[in-house]
Amino acid sequence: MTQTLGNYTGVERLPVFHRPMYKALAPTGEKVVLKSSDHEDYTEDALQAKRLLRHEETVLHAVEGHPSICRVVEYVWGTPHDLLVLRHAGDKTLADVSPQETALIARALASVSDALLHTHAQDVIHRDIKPKNIAIDENGNATLIDWNAAYREACPMPYWVPVGTGGYMGPEQVINRTPFRENDVHGLGATFYRAMTGTPAFKFPKRKSLPSTLSKDRIQQNFDAVHTERMHGDQYLFLHPHFSLEAVKPWRRVGELIVACFSNPDLRPGMREIRDTTIEQFGLEGKFS
Image (cartoon, rainbow, N blue to C red; front, side):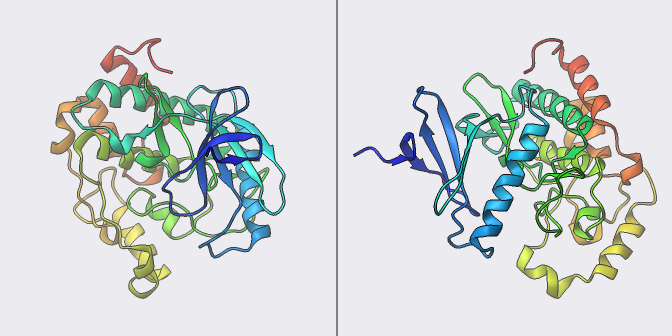
C-alpha cells in the first residue's frame, strides 16, 4: 500500500539524523522532499521545531532564483506537524562522489561557489556547507541544500547557538562569533578538499566531547595562535589538521585556493575568485548550472 502524507504519495523516509525527512511525489508527479517539524528523538519542543522549519523556508525565499539552490514548492501548515516541501535535488550527494570524478567535482565547485556568491549578495550565510549538503542529480548538477542553520540579519534564527558540522566549520563558528561570509569559504574549502582527496581536512572532536575538552578561552587562544599568517602553519590545534598542499597538487591553482580557505578569515580567497579560477582552469564557461 502506497504511503501518503497530505497530498503527497509514495512517501519514503530518508535516513537522516535530526528530523524526519521523506522522498515523495507531488500531485503533479514531481519528485519532492518533505521536511517535517515532527521532533521525535529531538531535544527541542514542537513549537521550536516549527519555528526552525519556518526559518528555513524564509531564508530559501530570500535566496531563491539560483539553479544551484534548492527550491521551495510550498509550506504546509498542519496539526500537529508542519511540512516544508522542496524540489528533489538528486539521489546522491558530493559525499558519494569519488575523487577520480574530477570533472564532476570541478563543475560542482563552480556551481556551488556561484550559488554562494548569490546567497551572500542577499546577506545570507549558509553556515553548514559539507559534502552531504550538496546534492547531485542524474545529470551531474549540484544543488546546495539544508538551509536550516543559515543566518540572515533580517530573519535571525529562532535561537542563538553555535551551528555547523565538526570538520567543516571554521574556528570562528566554534567560538560563536557573529556570522560572516568567510564562514562559508572555510566550509567550501573543507568540503571540496574532502571531495578532491577522499580524506578530511580536519578531524574534529565529536560534539559530545567538546564541553569536557575545550573551553571558550582555549579555543580563542588556538584561533589567535593559528590565524596569524596566510597559510595554516603547523598547528590548527583543536581542529586536528590533516590537510596539505601536496594532496591537492593535481588540482593546481584551484587546489591552492582550497587550502587557502583555511587561512585567517580576512585572508581567505573570495567566492568569486574560487568560481572564476575553477571555470577558467576546467573550461566550464557556460557549462555549469
